[in-house]
Image (cartoon, rainbow, N blue to C red):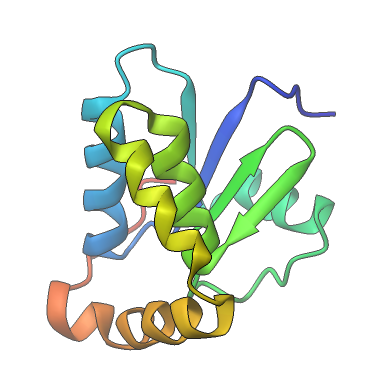
Length: 124
């Protein structure tokens, strides 16, 4: 069981954009409340299975807070909200219908390796 106070981020460990997101969150997370696991790692795979998410789908960041999880654009918005400070105000974009937000998210996800690059290996 994951505690309600835990903030877990699952990310694609070979994606440079995803790794930059993790670095960004780590830099802003002054209380070190976030924990990060590559989707490819054993811990990442266990958490995906626990929440019934496909283990082979590496096109979404997953944000887990307690027993709830968020994927795609909702994950990013909830992450920013939990990060606090001025970042929480970006949560206002949650009013945009999910299918529109997720369409934009998926366009970035499909081209992320081409635009941002790919790391040789995952730091799993």
